[in-house]
Image 1 (cartoon, rainbow, N blue to C red):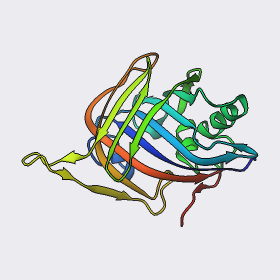
Image 2: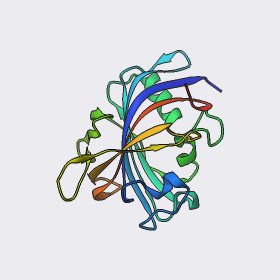
Image 3: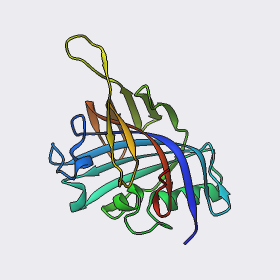
Length: 210
């Protein structure tokens, strides 16, 4: 197994309402899970291959709860990545070189039965984790915007967090609101649903905890 580690930030939008039942070992509130994710790798490596500054994104569709499988996915890798970096990122994203079910990459990969060919392209990401603001844009594929949840009466920003001491993706996530529209082989459309803003620190054994 090749050793790897990444530190970064993510924005995830799924079809669940704010809070996302999956974060609490419950079933998705729409009966299915459709999701869009974008990750900025601030520091990272896979073996001797550096991954600093690269970006990845993905679209997922599961017809029922994630653990029941039959999912479909498509991965996007930064066009600035070299051939070695592309290979390394795809191995991480598909759960290779990772302890079984140790990261969200490994868990999700185990539930996907149709993996579309990866796309190497420009990925625009704007990520303000504490401010719960963000944007994912992949031309011809993804348009996602995230913002804080707002009080329905006053419009004031409302802040909430999810803390998972034993989570396989993050330790703390800021909860926001997000909307997505995708095109291509996987069509997803959400409006003002669960937005997850989190700092990531992962390696092939799982979440690295301070």
